[in-house]
Amino acid sequence: LRPLVEEKSVDWHEYIVGENWNGEAKIGIRDASHKTIFYGDGGQICIYDLKNDLGEQNDIAAKHPKIAKEMETIISELE
Image 1 (spheres, rainbow, N blue to C red):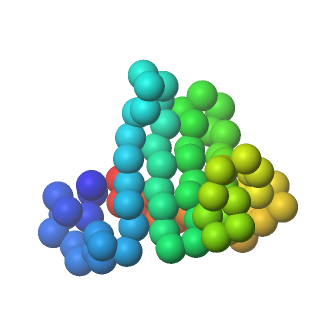
Image 2 (image 1 turned 45 degrees about the vertical axis):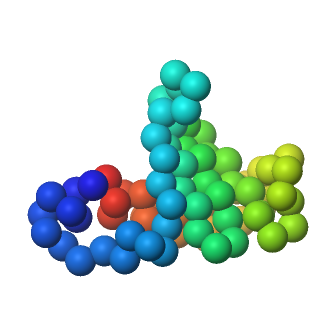
C-alpha cells in the first residue's frame, strides 16, 4: 500500500494481493504464472506454479530462487 499512500504509479491490475488468511499472519501475491505466500513466522516463502500445479501441492521456492526474489521485490514495493 505504500505506493498508493506515496502517490506512486503502480499497475495494481498486474497482481492480486491478499493478507492474513485463517487468522495466520501471511501475505499472498499472484501473477499470471505463480502464487506466492509469505508467512510471517520466520519469513517462509512458498511458491506454486499455477500453470502446472493447479492444486498448489508442490512448493517450488527452493528450486527457483530467482522467482522467489522477484516476488519478494514485488511485495516490498506494494507494502
